[in-house]
Every structure is written in structure tokens, then in C-alpha cells.
Amino acid sequence: LQCRRLPFSASASNNEQAAAKAAAVNANSGAPTIFDKIINKEIPSSIVYEDEKVLAFRDISPQAPVHVLVIPKFRDGLTELGKAEARHGEILGELLHAAKIVAEKEGILDGFRVVINSGPTACQSVYHLHLHVLGGRQMNWPPG
Ligand code: TR5
Image 1 (spheres, rainbow, N blue to C red):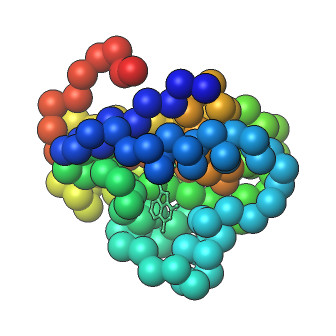
Image 2 (spheres, rainbow, N blue to C red):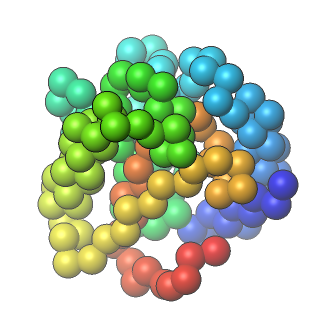
């Protein structure tokens, strides 16, 4: 696996690369992830938006001035987008709408990016579906 993670303002962290590899080994095992502890407030996070079904909080390793993760509070089998089924349609729509609310709250409606990494080859490292909302700087294309 070559999951190079280049933090916005620092060099790549060996810890993060190791974490991505370890997570890939357990990919889709269905085991709880660190996000469950964030949802349950067992671990503090910087919450940007929250409702009954969705939680949005700042990424601990921001890749842009604004980097917020949007997650479903109930994973319901959605370890990754690649596991989505028809019954997930409603929550998937709500997650996208929450991403827009986050962009509005963060003042980046003029331009922002939503990213979903699905699976080890896409460098997914936490197996609880999440949208990355990125902005506050000029975004480039294509992504790495
Ligand atoms: O690599 P993928 O797409 O799976 O994204 C997972 C994201 O979760 C990464 O951008 C990580 O920086 C982020 N992450 C990981 C942890 C964490 C977090 N964001 C906020 N708070 C976190 N805590 C407390 N612990 C983490 N391990």
C-alpha cells in the first residue's frame, strides 16, 4: 500500500502511514472505530454541526484551512461507500446536505471539495463512512 499523506503544512507522517496500513488490514471487519468514541463523546472533538443522524467535526490532521469530516451517527453497515445499498439512500443524501451546511458555516460556499475515500486503494483509514469537506484555499485538480 502506498498511502502517502502529506499534511497541509508538514511532511508526511510515518504514524499516519502505519495507521492507514493497519486500518486496511481490518477493513470492513465491522469492528468499532475511533469515530464511535467521537460520536459517543468519549473522545473530544471540535464539532461544527450535529443533528439526529449526522455529526461533523474537524479533522485532526487538516489538509486545508477548513477540513471537516461528516459522518453518519449510525454506521448501519456503511464501513465504506463501496458497501452502500439502496436502503442507505436517505442517509447518503443527508450527509451531502450536511456537507453543504458545513461549507456555509465555515464560509467556503464559494468553493469547497467533498471527498470520500472508499477502500484501501483509495487510502481510506477509518472504516466508518465519512465525507471530507475541504476548503479555505485554492484546490487543485487532479487530486493525488
Ligand atoms: O483516510 P480516510 O479517508 O479514512 O480519513 C480518515 C480521517 O480521519 C483522516 O483525515 C484522519 O486525519 C481523521 N482522523 C483520524 C483520527 C481523528 C481524525 N479526525 C479527528 N479526530 C480524530 N481522532 C480523535 N483520532 C483519530 N485516529
